[in-house]
Length: 380
Image (cartoon, rainbow, N blue to C red; front, side, top):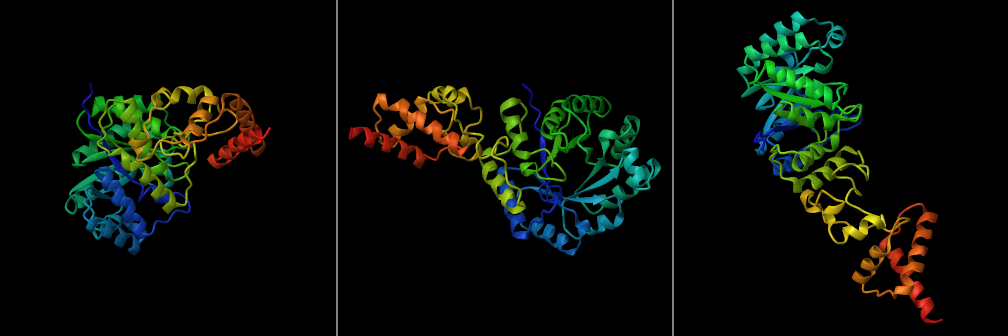
């Protein structure tokens, strides 16, 4: 059994807030931070101090609140950004450098500038923070020889960790695994973090693959909130590690449900009902083929227990695919005995009404159908 314990850095308050149109008020930030601390997250990326005075004050407020995590500030590769971060009192900084040719060209920089500036800024930041991490922006499109040179220099200047960023979400689980296995052969000791974006829908899978190929850290966001299609989702990564891996994550999973709802409300981004782990209907069942067996054992068709994510088990849904066992079980619990010869007509009526409405039927509607049928036939 693998004993590797991975390190999760939550960046909801930084990269998550960079989702288009999202602005967190300080009270919302504090509530999110409180729940992240309650969940056992050991490090969060609190924000980007260079945004301005209010951002600096917000970060400082969270740092001074004394939560159980380390606070990291994100900086561009400029002394001014580091000076702004110093004002926050953050424990550490992540200094981001462009490592792909396309990013360097767009920023009018080159490889020599990257290496030279890294030496200057890490030396400066190290005297002001407990730890300094280095971000390899757009690492997934960088030429591998330069990426290894970049990491070598980061080690040389004393960086605590190197972030390998899939900035545009171009990687897949196979290429992610290949990249981290190669990097681990070159750099067996440095802490390597993966930062995945979800442009092709693979951020969570890529993060999972990175861990199994040698990454010991990853930055994630609640609900996958982030720029464009978002980032790897904290709750999905944690439950994937919990149920589909032997790697230890150290997160208190019952907090995930509430954390997800709080971030959804604060961001204005509605959680789709079918979103993995925290969607409103991911623990719901309608199909009679399934529910008949689920009544005997939930684990037959459901690997996540509701209690694992701080929720209660959901009642079965009534609709086009409902079976007799679900109906009988529901009515029995409601103290509405249904004669055996009434069951199929009531079930047919439920299915007809669901098809007409193009939705599930609510419990009160099902009860009304059953009671009406019983009353009607008792008077015949």
